[in-house]
Amino acid sequence: MVALAEIEASSLGVRQIRKSFPVPDDPLLHRLVLDGISFSLAAGELVSLIGPSGCGKSTLLRLIAGLESPDSGELLIGSEKITQPGAERGLVFQDPNLFPWLTVRHNIQAGLVARGVLRETHHEVGDFMRLVGLESFADAYPHHLSGGMAQRVALARALINHPKVLLLDEPLGALDAFTRMRMQDEVLRLWQARRTTMLLVTHDIDEAIYMSDRIMIMSPRPGRIERTISVALDRPRQRSSPDFLRLRGDILEFVHFAGNASIENKD
Ligand SMILES: Nc1ncnc2c1ncn2[C@@H]1O[C@H](COP(=O)(O)OP(=O)(O)OP(=O)(O)O)[C@@H](O)[C@H]1O
Ligand SMILES: [Mg+2]
Image 1: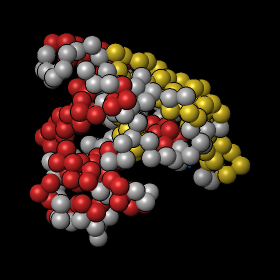
Image 2: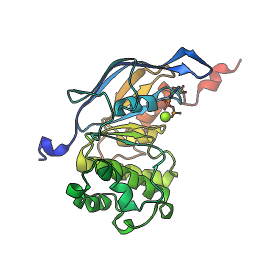
Image 3: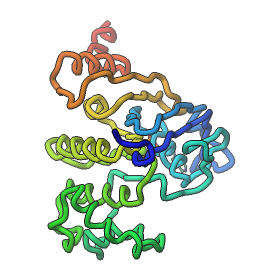
């Protein structure tokens, strides 16, 4: 059994978070974006967050990353309060945001260079390139890579800092359906290998069911957690199993996309 210290994960606590932004055409007015968000992730849990566009999912991830501060409420990594960005929280976006002038190897080690720890940790760069299956592309530049490969570089670049919590903001959103399904397995493999706590924002209900221990559904803005669903299906999950499809149907119904709304509107 893996000792807890090797798991490298940490719990995440989100307590009564409220966040508003100035309205662009009237900066004296503030618009509430997050309205009292509370939840916890246990160390090593993989939880998805779904909700309509604009409900505040990215804002919530940016708050946890320490890139913004809440109007009120508290954010905790383990028992530590989050007040600023830190290497123990990794963030991966939809766009891999690689440095185009750096090779795969140099992109992956960029964070180590910035933190001044490359000398002690450079031996890990090869390990992480292997982990994401890119060791033979070490000297390639981003324009040589497919979308899926570039996203794997972005994942390795985040993981090499040994984050205790990995925040994923639609990391597979720009990929085609087949690459996306393959990458879901890659992320699950990385999660199973490292047991990093993961919070995954996705628009894809199938992806949320396929990947996560729990799914949190947010309301339209101002965002609140409307419902949390545990996914009690064995892994690896079968995308077309009756239990999978039943859960999919329940979630679609809850978010009003089950496809039977037009009948009620007929007059
Ligand atoms: N820096 C900012 N200044 C002003 N308004 C902001 C800022 N960042 C986000 N917002 C507003 O907050 C709301 C939530 O934005 P956010 O990007 O968190 O939504 P989202 O749920 O991630 O949407 P999507 O699914 O489209 O990515 C939006 O109305 C957005 O315009
Ligand atoms: Mg977003």
